[in-house]
Length: 118
Image (cartoon, rainbow, N blue to C red; front, side, top):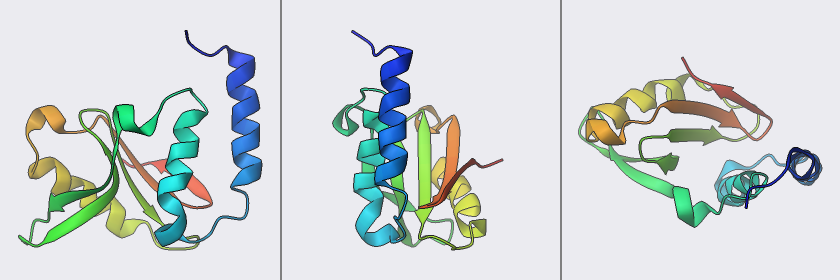
């Protein structure tokens, strides 16, 4: 059974309070996204892979912070970091993955903001 709107709002408020002082991508990214999905009653094991291995356009190996095949790619940086590189990295993932795995949504995030990349 799905969550009702009031439960989602309550969980979202708790999430925002819990993560208000987050600032370090390396140590806080994975637990941040696990808690984020829990707002909606979604377990991370059901949808996403963390530190997903991708091949860069240069041929080198790289990682994206969160990958949900066919749905979502998240590239996260520490608070205050530039999000230009994560915006470019999404194209690398799409061009090196089967087209059916290419995410619909591309989110660039710092531990202070979240935006849907163009």
